[in-house]
Length: 451
Image (cartoon, rainbow, N blue to C red; front, side, top):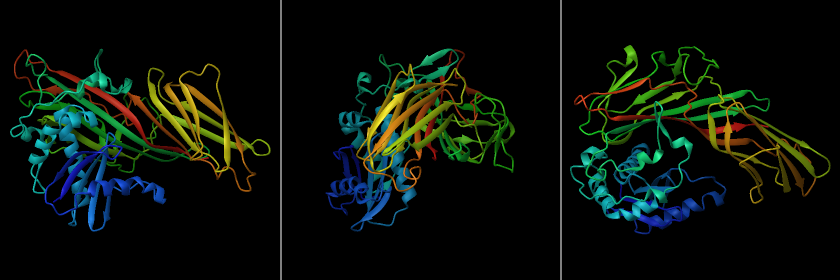
């Protein structure tokens, strides 16, 4: 049971506010934002997703830069409320097509109508897009796609030789196409977020993959779908190791530590042929979440070195090598490295012919930043940085710097080698042939190299 629900912008503006029970002061949104904003300045890092302030429990999740918040005075289950916030965000996205501040403000009447159906007097009624269609009749006002930020190559869907831009999934699942036509398409995302920690000598200390198979259905009549995964997929470690550096595009046994499935998935044939049978609800939902902690070939190798270069000077050398095939390209790579606190100036030297690189020294928090627009598989990139100090170091300079962290996105690539072998849709007629689009994306969750 929750007392209030509200959505705040990054500036703290109240975009949506609904008070269901009148138990919490009206100024709770301002109190919450002030506390979250200054949490870091109190030296305690980011605000936790759940905290108590003056007898009020605050729960929040961040979705595309927006803060979705619930308050209550009772001792509610944190996991239940956080899941509710995620589902509300997903329902709103299903209806609006794209979730951002502009679309919320433009469709505030529809959003409030949805909230009144999802929650009644603080109690959850339903978070199903399909069920809500029977009660919510406002049509969404579409946000102009030209005003959306560029999605980049990682957003492209593939079906054989055909390509579909990522903006295809930013359309509402309840609105018809111009002319009253209904879209007959289904989109499948295999998204993997990887966490890797390298030692100073380049060995892998920890590695983990958090993956999800996400589906967004624009099919009418809810036809049955059969989604086939790798036949040699194994669930549970069973004492085996798969330190197999074969191609990430297929081949080799895929061993997952554990997984869970959406409630609509039937697992009758899963143990036999690794096929998931489901009748997909309208909208976006996770078909399967999985986790893998076996050793795998990391997409990048990072080598970092810092050494003194005379009085009040030091040199940093950063090397990044792409370990994937040359027909794959990583995008929006960002590398950061904390420097010694007495660093006053940094000069950078890139390799000859380097294109699309940005370098910066953030003096406020003594951090080196290196951005690369793209990295082609098999290539290696080097950055040299010369540091100037305000005083002599009396300790170990290596201990005062690092670790190096990296973020990236690699489209049409997945580390675990989990594949969608086919996506079969039950035919309603001989002419029924909806489009099926599949996209693989690998992202960095925590990619760290120690010095």
